[in-house]
Structures are given as C-alpha cells and as structure tokens.
Length: 395
Length: 79
Ligand SMILES: Cc1ncc(COP(=O)(O)O)c(C=O)c1O
Image 1 (cartoon, each protein chain N blue to C red):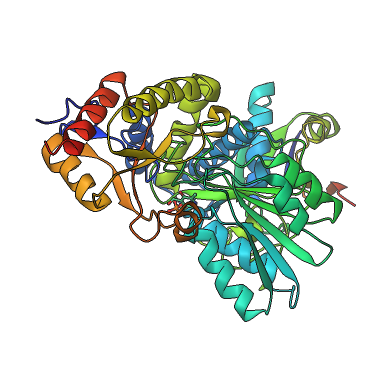
Image 2 (cartoon, rainbow over the protein chains, first blue to last red):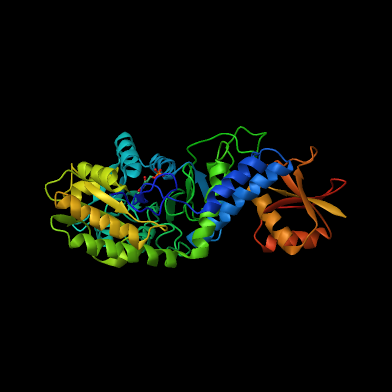
C-alpha cells in the first residue's frame, strides 16, 4: 500500500520530514526563483545597472519581510548566510573569541550546528561549557538556564524548539536574566520561525538565528540571523561587499559587515516568496492547522500497542515534531518500512542532536521522527497512524 | 533642480528607493559620479527641493550620508 500523498507530483508520498526541510513549497517560491534566474540574474550591489538594482530590490524586499516576521524594525540588521549552521558558526566564533577563561551557557536540546562549534571553540579558548539538561519530558526549565548565568558568562545559546522532540524553550525569561549581565542570547529559531509566533521587539540582547528552508518555506542555501542594536560583534567572514571598495578594511555598517561575497540571490528570491506566503496565511493560522494535525497524530499513535511517544504533553510548548519508537524495533527499520511499504518519508536516528537523545534516554538508537508542515492533511496523518499500527502488529 | 543623495550601503539605497517610490518622487538609482567619494557604489538622483527630499528620507530613518547638486557642490553632509 502506498501513501495517498499530498506532497510532490513525481512520487506519490506522504511527506512527514518537514523538520529536515519543508516540502512541498508554495508554487510562488519556484516562480520567484525562476523569474530572478531568467529575467534578472545580476549581482546586487556590485554594479549600478538596472538589473543589479532589480536584484538589490529582491534582497532588500526579503530583509523587510523577515524583519516583519521577527517583529523588529531594522531590515539592515537582518544578515544573510547560507544556512543556520553558517550563522551559528559566525556567532559562536565572534562571541567566544575574546572570552578566554569565561563560560558559555547552553542546553542539552541543541543541534550539532550549535554543540559542535561550541565544543570546539570552548576547548580552544579554555571556556567552560555549561550544558543545562532537559528533563525526561524533553523540557528545559528557563530557571535552570538563568541559574547558570553569571558575570563571567560571555553568551547563552538556546534552542527555541527541539528538532528531535518538538519541545519549546521559552526564551523570554532567559533573555531577561541574561540582560541583567549584559549578555547576548543566541536563539536557534530553526524549528519555530514560520510555525510558532515570535516577536523580538522587546529584546535588545536576543540574536535569532534562522534557516530559510524549513518553516519559512524557502529554498535550501538560505538562512541568517538578526543582530539587535544592543549587540556589537566582529565579523568572521570578510571580503567584497560592493561598498567601501577603495578600502582594504571590512565595512563597519550592517549588513555589509557580515555579508561578504555574492549572496544566494536565487535562494533569497524564493525565500522572499516563502515568507510572504507565511505572512499572508499568518503564523497563528499555520500553527493552528499544524497543531490540529499533530494532536490527531499524537492521539492516533498513542492508541497503538507498543508505541512509545516522547516529549511533554503541554501543547503550548510543542511544535509539530513527534518522536516515537516501537518497542523492540530498530528506528531505522521502522522508517525503512514506512517508506518502502507505505510511501511515508520520515527520519530515523539521532537527528544531529546526540545531547538531546542522551538526556531523554533514547541514545544511541534514536527515534523515528514525524514532522508536520503547512501542506500536510488529515489524510496524511491517518495513513501514518495506520502504517505504524501495521508495522507494530508485524504487518 | 536635481540632486545626488549618497548612502553607506546598497541596503540604504534600497530603503530610499522604497520611500521615494511610495511618495511618488521622481528619482533614479545610478552609479556614484566619479568625482564624489562614497562608501557605496550606488546613489540616488532625485529632483525637487533637496531639503524637502532629504527630510522625507530622514523621517523614514534612511541613513543619508551626503547631498550634492548637479554641479557637484556639497549641499549637506552627515556630521
Ligand atoms: C534545531 C536546528 N538547528 C540548526 C539546524 C541547521 O539548519 P541548516 O541545516 O539549515 O543549517 C537544524 C536543521 O538541520 C535544526 O533542526
């Protein structure tokens, strides 16, 4: 039996891997990529001709839409990188490089995009890495994070929502306690932006990091961060910006300070269309749709004998990412059968987050992860529940 | 009369682009004339009263760095 499939036209599949990358995307995303590629194509900010200006308009338009989504006022503070991982590396290095002997506070829910650069540079700069564990329910208590912050802390890195267990860490309380020490908080919004309402207007020390290809529905190869006025950083990547060309010094103003080299304008054109779609639908509306499906999925799987579900049942602290196991079965085998026998695309294993699995007790086998997106339907959920049931019953 | 408005970065030029286009100002985006020195390669040439035009931009928080007339005399410079 194959999934009836609301995703994609070539393969009739049920796509439940939106936490890895969202699929499908709104048609306007690919229209925008093609329109730029076919009709504009120029390098923004490098030359003064009309096509270069048109390209610069596309990039600026995307900054504007992202600042609206983030609830902030300064589009020039939206910095583009090639993905969240690159943004994290820039921020980890920039925030740690002058902090020899100090400490960094983070949580056990972090993705390797955070934990690996943190581990590496903490060792290099002799910085103490304080990893605040989550409970068995995959929740981090913001108070625990605050207690670990002191006057020797140089930065706090927090995952807004776990890509493994879907649990949300409220960042507001952490931002306020870090602000008392004048410390920046880097927030990994990879799994929340576009699916969970946020606003950063009240926080001068929070640096949200985003990726373009998940909840923002843009193409891969897009991402970045927002640098609030309260945080000053040195750049990590330097080079041509199209500004200050007579000088061999990196520009000191934003976004040029952090955007050397030609941008991925194809991707940014598509990202702009994705974000405009998200803004039109409204994040609240998208969340309602996705969480309705999520609850349907949760209840359905809960009723299947032998299925273990992970993470808390506080729905306001969840995004539509669900990790589960079937007792006595290898998650990789379960995912393989879901794909081969039922046409369901999902992800087994550790999901680039070994710390999180260790904290919840699912290391080293990991879990099977279903992650829902804007284009999933009730039918997708029903196909998935039925498939898991049949696998659990030995088919 | 038309004037050159200079900015630090392409992003600021794009902000000016959005503001002038919204307000119906007659303007063009073009490379900075060789005789002027600017951090950004692009500038905006707009026609009207330079003080009024400048205020339109400053009120919308566009960071203008300088204004020159067509004879390239300096009208205003950010201090
Ligand atoms: C929580 C989290 N952080 C960071 C990343 C890295 O994103 P990217 O692969 O786009 O750099 C991901 C996804 O892969 C993620 O789920």
